[in-house]
Image (cartoon, rainbow, N blue to C red; front, top):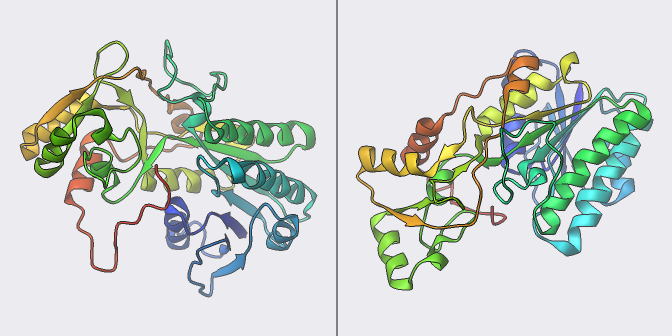
Length: 326
């Protein structure tokens, strides 16, 4: 088993490689990490290929003798790159994969941006059968195109593909910084821009957290997944016949409720909260299909997500670096 991992130096890529190498189910599995700007360390089971998936020659060479692909590389809101990298890059990967004599399984990590996450109102749980509806911007559009392209390669050529659709992925102290009123906020909304400057400074200093409300005035419900749970889902999908040509929502069992977050942080850490109005919509990703077909279970709930983020202590050689906004 030789697994090509794109986006190997990213949050999910690093955790996936470590998880696979430690998993007794895959003692002979080897990794080929396709890296572009950053490189991961090579070992007796990890080799590095370098280049961009936008280059067909790079993709062709990287796929030599590969049996599995775990495709993680993507772009955010970068219109100059998104079509070449995310769309054309996936096309080259699928084209070369379907022509390969060794190819066995292609796993794509999708995102809830393809469903518009909290941009659109949903009248019920978001299952895998809900139609695509990207929110404005090139990133969400690219996530729709990825899922559709993989699905069509299955229809056109019988390619054994599987898409694991994840919401916002957390690790280490990420969740703590999604709630910061300071300059160190991770992702969006940028809370300091939604309150007066003096208030934002005070909230940042005393650890006040935002209690985001949805368009109906209720505490917003938003989906998250911890990177460890996403990695366990990828490992559960590898060579699983029940994953063939399937789409799975990979998320926590229930969305994070900002009201419950505020209450828990007040009770356990004495932190205050402040209401933030929005026109966003609460939603609930239904992960029951993955639980049923893959026998997968997430380990993180809201309390574990919060506690792990607030208890995480960074070492001197582990600076908080945000490679992209969210």
